[in-house]
Structures are given as C-alpha cells and as structure tokens.
Amino acid sequence: MLDPRDWEAFRSEAHRALDDAVDFLRDVRERPAWQEMPESAKERLREPLPNAPSAFSDVYQSFVENILPYTGGNIHPRFFGWVQGTGTPSGAIAELLAATMNANVGGRNHGAVYVERQVIAWSRDLFGFPPGATGVLTTGASEANLIGVLVARTRALGGEVRERGIDPQRARITGYASAATHGCVRRAFEIAGIGSEALRILPTDAHQRIDTVALREAIASDRAAGARPFLIVANAGTVDVGAIDPLDEIATIARDEGCHLHVDGAFGALAILSETLRGRLRGIERADSIAFDFHKWAHAPYDVGCVLVRDGEAHRATFASEGPYLTRMTRGLASATPWFTDYIPELSRSFRALKVWFTLKEQGTARIAAAIERNVEQASALGAEIDADSRFELLAPVRLNVVCFRYRPQGLDESELDAFNDELVIRIQESGIAVLSSTSIGGRRALRACFVNHRTIDEDLQILLAGIRELGERLARERLLG
Ligand SMILES: Cc1ncc(COP(=O)(O)O)c(C=O)c1O
Image 1 (cartoon, rainbow, N blue to C red):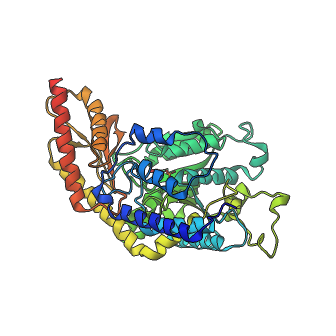
Image 2 (image 1 turned 90 degrees about the horizontal axis):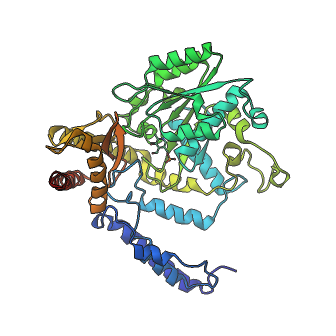
Image 3 (image 1 turned 135 degrees about the horizontal axis):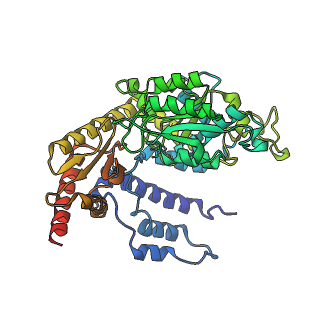
C-alpha cells in the first residue's frame, strides 16, 4: 500500500504545503517576474532513479528549494509573454481536489463526467451553438484545433477516411487560413495526413485580418484546378497581434463554398464574455467548430482548452471506436454514453473540468469579463504611451490585448535593430522586472506585450515602461560605445 502509515502526520505535512502554497501566491508580486533556475538547483535534480523511499517532508523540502521558485513567470503580475493565463488560487485548490478524486474522464458513469458535460453545455450556450453540438475539454487550443481539422476531414471525406487514409487520387482537399494563423493549424494539417502543402496561406490586411478577396480567389482557383476546398480556419485573436478575422463574412463564404468553418479563438473567443467586446466576434456563432482555451483568458490552471463541434455526428464519427474491454452498458459504471473518448484521441483523461467549473462558478463570468476588459484597456494604454515616446515605434495597431513595438535608439543603424530588440527582450526577462516575448511584424523583430493577466495593475505598466527605457538606454550605450 502506498498510503501514509500515519495519516495524522501526513495531515500536518499537507497543511504545511497548503499554507506555503497560499503564501507563495499571496506574495507573488514581491518576487521577480522570472528568474533562471541556477545550475545548483538543476544539479540537485539530477539523481539516479530512487529505489528506496524518502520521507514526504524531504521530498517536499527539495521541491520548495529547487523547483518552486523557478516558475515560468506567468503567475506574476508583470508577465506579458506569449499568451499565458495567470491561474487563480481557487483553481489550484480545484486541481488538488481533482487529483484527490483521481478521476479518469475518458468516459463511464461518475461525477467528473457530469461536470465536464456541464462545462461543455455552458460553452455551447456561450457561443450560441445548438443542443446537438458536442464538445470536449482538451490539453489546449493546439489539440482543439487538431480536432477541428480532423472533424472537417471527416465531413469532407466521410468516416471511411479513418480506414482508407487520404487518397489524393480520389479527392485533393484544400484548406485556407491567413498568414497570421498560429503554427499549430499547420501542424494539425500535417498530423491529420492532409499535409501542410494543402493549407493555403492567405495574405492579411494592415490589421492582420485575412484578405477575404484573396480567400475567395484561392478557393475558386483550387476548385478550377480540380481540388476540393473543405475547410476555412478563421482567427478570433491572432497570436501575434490579437486580430479578429471578419467572422460573419467568412461564415458566408464558407456556406457558399460548402467549406467547414473552424475558428481558432484560443484566447480571443472568450472576449464573448464581455458585453463591450462581444460585437467584435459577430459571426462566431455560425462556425462549424470553435477552439478556445480556458487556461488563457479564463485563468483556469494549465492545462485546459475546449473544442465545440456543431455537427455532433461528424465529431463522433471522427473518433468513436470500440473494443471488448470498453463495452458500453446500459447501467452501472460502464454506462452514460457517449463517452468523452468518442470525441478526442485520448482514452485516459484527467478531470480538467473541475478547475473550469470551480473558476466559472466562483468568479462568475462577469468578473472574468471585467478582467478581460481591463486587459484590453491596459494594452491600449501601453500602446498610447509607446506611440507618444520617440524612442519607441509601434509595429502594429493595438486592436485587442497585444502591443508589438520596438526600441529605436538614436544613432543605431536600422540593420542592427532586430538583434538589439531581441537582446532587449532577454535583458528584461533576466532583470526580473517583467517578461515580454518577441515576434516579427512585417519582417521586423518586435517586443511583444500580451495582456492575459488578471493580476496586472496600472502601476505594473509604469514599472514595465521604466524598466524597458532604462535597460534600452543601457544597451544602446553599450552598442554605441562597443
Ligand atoms: C491563436 C492561438 N492559437 C493556438 C494557440 C495554441 O494554444 P495552446 O498553447 O493552448 O495549445 C495559441 C497559443 O498561444 C494561440 O495564441
């Protein structure tokens, strides 16, 4: 038996761990936004596979010293890198409780399944999907997008594609997405066996929204060449700048062309929670499938994304399978069909739904929406400050929650700016003041600040700006002198 020998001793150790965790979150602002794990801590982790047991308190102590301080930074109020949610203290407790139940949510008849069904029902309502629509919680938007692509493949080629594979002699299917689309969509085409060459990458306008004239032309030209356009992937919040494609217009194109419309709304889709932002997503309710993350703008702890599919039959036809060891019954634990494994490649699955259920119930959608709106205002405020300062150059209009810009020190040649700004991003991270990430906008390297952080307050923006100015000036001096 692997249970504690002394439950009361374990209880006190567990209470201590919980107290430490609460303190850790309460005091997050007092620590650096990020600090590199020192070699000494990495070294202490390197040890042979333990054969003999250790006391829980010893293992815990090693965790506290060698692992806990070295977070990826995203719980900190001045983390603006990539697109990473902050999490919440109650979400952490939900994770503990989910692990306590240790539910396997591939299917069967137990509480966790009904919680996930409820989360999916809420999501369906949120996006105006009909009752027959299906959904499942995923590891994230990458997996949710993959499922969207696979369902679209089934709808185009029939369920028999699972046995036969894709035969280009029978049908050459082609998909469409803008150049601003996240790389996981391309990867989904590769994994789905369609091949990324069959994903047509379309140009964007000045706001990084898909060029719908080019979209129509590409579809017509592929059709004329004997291909079968089957899928349009639209963005509700592009990864680089947060652009939202004209979803309603694209839904009409998809309908006219007989294409499946999948929306990658990894973070942006949850702007639907906000009354003031919702209008920007008009048309999302017409999608055939939507991918979005609860671990980004809803702040459920990692990992949890979601995919919704309007055509539930096609969703089932894409994944459902049988085996005598998985026989479904009409009563007992093996009942309660359909099972979630019928909608996703996973069989064994964690109880991801509990942290979402806790978060949505405890915070309420109004509070989450307010945090989203605050992030949009913060991005706009930072964008305005950047625009007003001659040392900076805004590289894309701030439309939602992302600010892409670069530092332009006087006297530095244009050709040196990319390397300068990449170095500046690293220095800001290493300073512990804040975390930004980098990207390329129009071929120019950018500092990128993305606001999906419910802990950020206005003062953090001032600290961030002061930090960038100071480190930028110092780096510029070094470059000009050196
Ligand atoms: C637009 C977009 N799509 C997809 C993804 C991938 O999401 P995940 O990291 O949850 O797999 C991201 C991640 O930032 C994203 O911004």
